[in-house]
Length: 347
Image (cartoon, rainbow, N blue to C red; front, side, top):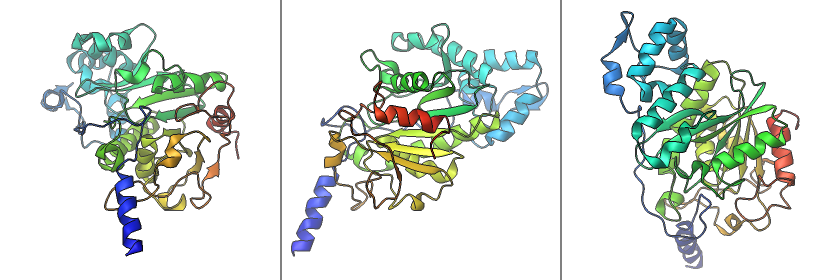
């Protein structure tokens, strides 16, 4: 009976698993935005130079890249103007073309909450205005970079919160800027809020439903980077974002996967991720994620603590990290180690 009681208590506690930066707050059930980008129906019925267009849902990014390689400038501009939301989100399409397509798409929404994303100099690699909005932004020159990092954030992140004021080192864009600065500008960093994240604490944060949808999108996104010739990325996965990375790890070509402030990766060990990437983990001494039960009961919870010795990840020093979102604070040991991993200097 005692053992059953402990299991029931653990199951109840698992409901409090949280994935983001909002802290202990109530959560609302989210509808995941998945599938091909808006405008796909019109894209599918179109053609260019007599050629059918690659299907955004079924064509592999490598196939998309080959298609665009065979187009002249006139055809590229035709597709850009007619289908900006598809081109901007089409993994495997040329990077510069996607930046311009997303600028057009952001402006076309007419929504003030997105206006800053169209500012001169911003490199928006993906933009989807559906739901709370999804966005991926590049910091640095992704086309020429020798090293690439991708930030995968946790709960309470979307296209509006992506670069919100007051989140200089904690929001997706803030973490990306901080990492790029710490590497001396030698790494191109992508802030990837490319999935529907949980809001606060609730079943969305405790189960894997949104992470499963996010993992499919992350795997395709990294395949798109590979298709246009970028180096294998390092994935930096915060909180619920580490659940996404855990589910996607087997299907990406990441060189390293770094989980920090993690509620679990839906795997019992680093080996169980079935990835050739090096797996790292960090948790600061005051990170409240330590109080979340690292269990899986009836579909709730995300499993073994990646920062525990039992998981088998390489440890990242985080003794000076404050709170749940302080891992990219300038001068911190965690940021210095992250920078070394991103540059391929840590062994």
